[in-house]
Image (tube, rainbow, N blue to C red):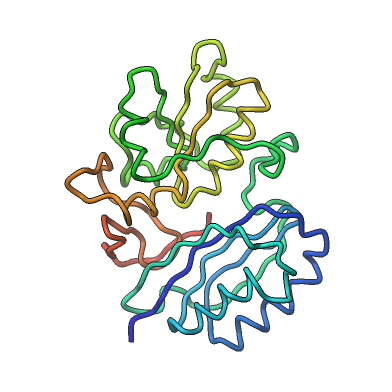
Length: 250
C-alpha cells in the first residue's frame, strides 16, 4: 500500500508546548504514524507518514481539533507519497525554535516577507534586479537549485544570519527572492532581513516542494533534485521519488 507523507509547519503561540508533547505523541502512535515533529513556544514543524486515512485524521486534528484549540488553522501543509515507510520511528521533540536561527528579532508572527506562489515565482526570479537566494544548507544546494540562485555556502541554517551580515546590504540588494525546501526557513530568514532594514523581501510560498508539485516540468526553472529529510532522500518534479538511501536531520 502507498504511504502518504505530510510535511507541515506553522508559527503560532504555543506557550504550553511542553504539555502538548505527550498528547500529540499518543495521538500519532494511535494512528500508527512515524516521522518527526518539533514543538516549540513559537509553533510546530514536522514530517510524518502513514496510511492515507491516518494522515487525513492527523491533519484534521492539528487544524480543527481540541488539542491545539484552533491555533493551527493556517497550517502550511504539503502531501506526497512514498513506496515504503520513509521513517523508522516516531519522534515528538521539544525545541527552543522550530527552525533554529538564533535571532530573537526574527519573529514571523510579527513580520514576514511577501509570499509568492509557485506559478508566479518564475517571473520574479527572472527580473534582472532580483537577487535570488537559496537559504538551504550547502549539501542540499549541491543536489539542486533554481537557475541563477546564490548559494550562501552554509552548513546549517543557524549560519544564515552571519552570511547576511557579511554578504547582503540593504542599500545594494533592494529586492531579494528567497526559497527553501518547504518554506519554513524562509519565514525566519525573511523576518531577519526585514528587521535589518531590507526593503523588498519575497519568498516562495510552500517552498521548492510546492513549486515541484504545481509547475509543469517544461516550464520549470528548477535544476536537479530536492533533498528531503527522510529515507526517500530526494524528490523531483511531480514530487516523484528519486534515489534511495538514508535521510539526515535538519
